[in-house]
Length: 251
Length: 326
Image 1 (cartoon, rainbow over the protein chains, first blue to last red):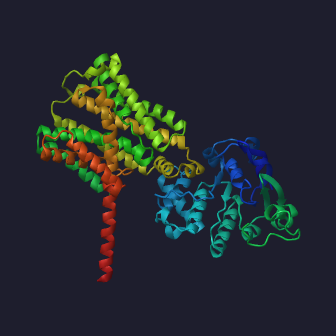
Image 2: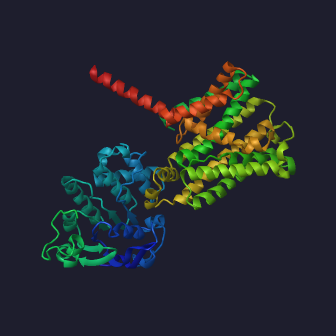
Image 3: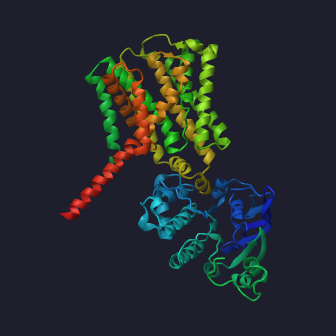
């Protein structure tokens, strides 16, 4: 397996605050890799840097072996990195299919091809029945799917998912997990920030744990959850050493 | 061309027929002036309506188009048609420059509106003082009627030329709506961050939009000069035209193909009617414009086109309901 993404010693400071400190990890091609960590650990900041929305203060980011540190977001999208936002950002005034078509236009100049691509993607993520509905009318679960669909329509090699499962109820999560598995089966590498441990356990081959801006652990999810450092990060140092993070817990 | 375009075609054809029905100067004057405003508003609509970048200074482009057309003819003896074309090009250039300066530094919303207003005001003050523009006295283009000079004794011809330009921009806007550029521009309006994440170069998209927008509004300015054969700083760069352009687009329906034309026609018809009734109260039509703006913002944020769409939707629902009842 080759490496899709390598983050090497990436640091991001906001004034005196170090949001991400010398984070290093890799994402293997074809994997679903998780990035977990307590609130405020710096996960979203790390995502912003990988997707080109913020430049790192130090360190570098390699995408398919190429240094893409500080490259602008729209150029990275063209190179094959797509992201979703933790707080969904639909184009509220547009219909669902028009929303997705904006993503599809990245690789399809013609309106008809872009719309066709958008419909195909909508099918794949289960939005086929709401194609012409205004994006603003979607439920939370629908909007999460729309985020996913738009990113997917750019035909990325690497998909960065920022808490696509947050705010969904257990049955909605059950519905969307196979969608993610299908996306991976379609050849897209996924890096996901997720708090829903049940999904992380079932989807990810590898998880990296970020706490206070540092990567403190990495490996198969089952192992990572037993790691005392991880337990400490989530539950504090006085938590029973033997306790694992309970399944489905939202720390 | 779809059924959606029939009302547009109908309006254009109706206006084209007016000069055949009457040769009354007041009517033709009204039409030319209103079409010039419509053209300026169409320009505003590309940037403000589709791109969501509300400019308060489209006078900068209108005035550039007007002055460049006039100066080239008066000072350099350039042909009217060439002056017209160069006026449009100059407007586009000013648009690109103002766009680069303000979008580059990330100005959005009210900050962008203020900066455009400032640019237009600076140009107005400069035009009022510089010798090349004739200063406060303005510039008179020499009367030389003849198709070769882009001057026509028959006002009907001007109606058709103005209408042709407006129709050209209608087609352009419609095509833009269905293009990648149009989709990306609307995406930037709706949510710039999300658009960037989807590979949209927001800066380039906005620059393209302001350049196109400025070119169209500059065409309105250039046409104004060819029709009235006179320009001064207040006419060219005054806030009146910035307001006219944005008001017509907003009242008609920003971000729609037909909105600016419908808005300009409605506002100016309303203005004329008011003037006819109120007689000699100076500026009464402006009072009406103000009231219309308040009404639009409060009750029809999507303008007349939005209102029409809502009414159509309601009627369709009613029809469906009565069918279901029957």
